[in-house]
Image (tube, rainbow, N blue to C red; front, side, top):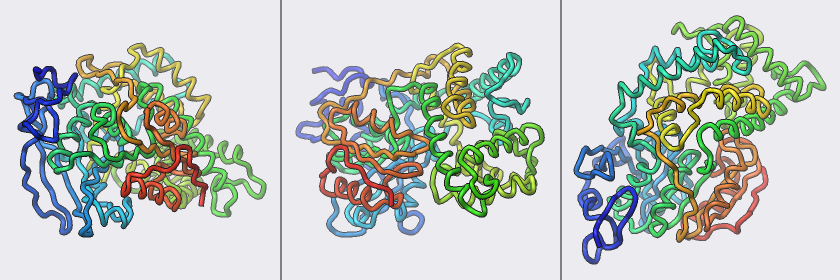
Length: 503
């Protein structure tokens, strides 16, 4: 039996005789490599793992994938638990650093917690597109760019300007990262993760992925179903959607989450959205529209001294960031009070910086990775009119966020054809039970996506968290935590359709 095209076929028996791993002989150097682990940051261990840039050309260029692990705290070790926080663009290294908060004590007792920066992210050959000044301009202008226009009401001239700016972004990615762009799709990341599994010495993968990390996990389950021990896909993406469809549906999730925040806010004495006793959600939403319109006409003040104007786009980003967790709600209430009472948008600006990885004057490469991977994973429309129609549709689902989210997919209209992949139909045939976790008022990954992914996977098991915020595990719900921990530790999923009520 010949070992043929790596990216399209994994051939049983191409490994070493008697080896529990099955892989093409051409990949033997990667699957059998021995990595050198070194102590780092006191309690962690760090290493790099080599993978081929192109799995169809394993003799060609190689990439170094940065890996970090926290050794199991107890002696009765099960193996490695590979974790990913999402993105695209989130750092698995940072997620391991946060293991004490994001993974239960019981799980850390039994597993090495392992994270990696996916190719193109963080410390693993990071993608680069715009420099800091360019990103400041790109993120500050939003769908209206320099015009400051309402993205729901762009004129033809403004649409042309927008298209030109997004085409410029794409060209910057090609100039600075052109060799990487064809090889950063999620399918490549899933194959890298199987190399990592083998290097870690695990016959089967134990995995916890959140948000976009669920897409990585679903792709792994699709390509390597027999190598899955357990997989938790929390805050599920729907792999059947392209990038534009994802943005439009995501707008509905953010609308649901925003209204939940506003409903909570208007009942409080410290809420700038309240107009007094009896204020309704609609009153609060109207107040937010007033603030956005004010930022259109005159940007809010920024006291950081870095020259950035708090435009409509940056107000939107600050609000978006605040919806990812209820723990941010007090911070956004204070930021809104400063914006309304003093015209000070600094608090909202800081929230938006957190969302896009700006620390001081430095950006993580999150924006480049986010757009590049999203455009690589799906065939997207090439006609600008499709995006305008999507913006109009999204405005109906989410008047505040919808148009900007839809227009934000426009770089994919200009993405180089050789860097666009076709995501396969995901069914995970042959995999053991895969646990899909959905939160009913999740802003970034609408609950309907979890329902959809659980249906697509032949062995999908749906666990529901009633509540607010992004993702379910370790978000303050003991029922969810117990169900996930039981599955990770004992390979015992909860009953399909289990609902954990809000606490």
